[in-house]
Length: 248
Image 1: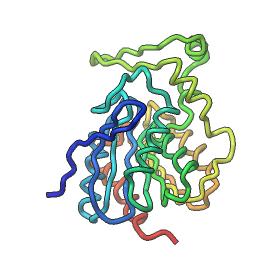
Image 2 (image 1 turned 60 degrees about the horizontal axis):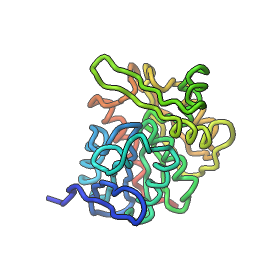
Image 3 (image 1 turned 90 degrees about the horizontal axis):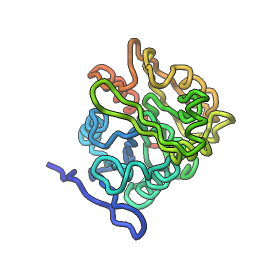
Image 4 (image 1 turned 90 degrees about the vertical axis):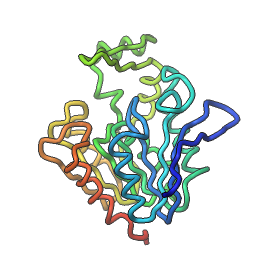
């Protein structure tokens, strides 16, 4: 059995980042979790098993302040997590990369493709949520965030979602949907038509903003935001499989 145990990336500045790396052939699959999520969710685990079946390398990691990584979640910003994803890509990924981002991870994947176009062979957005600091908050909450307030949204199960002013401000400065997105690699988007967190319209807006001519959007009937049901994960894997062919 291959060693995909938990490891930590040491760096001179900043918290240690937890990651798991599967050795294999190229392209490397890079999974980017969503907001306040980690690398051990059902989609990430399924993609790792998929990589194992095809003998591919795969890298997944936790942003600082999330999962097994060091740091405080409240210190996290979109810009900081994009920098961390870039660091992990540069120092740990092997060869060409298929970047797969879930929710906020899809936003980060887009920025990775803009920063490292020579590395990103293809991009997959699972319920991708670019610019959610803009469309995801009503004006009165934006005003509170702009004033430096931290918002806390309580859930019925006892959990909570925290949004800091720093994260919100960072996201606002890194919006993509207001102009053409200069990404030319193949892009595959999958979205549920009952996603209550990221409206389906965001997927269509993203499709239209991408410069690439090779963009496909798959809409899953009755799919919610998580897209973690077995048939939904199977659909994601079927979408990734054709992207394994060497890029021209």
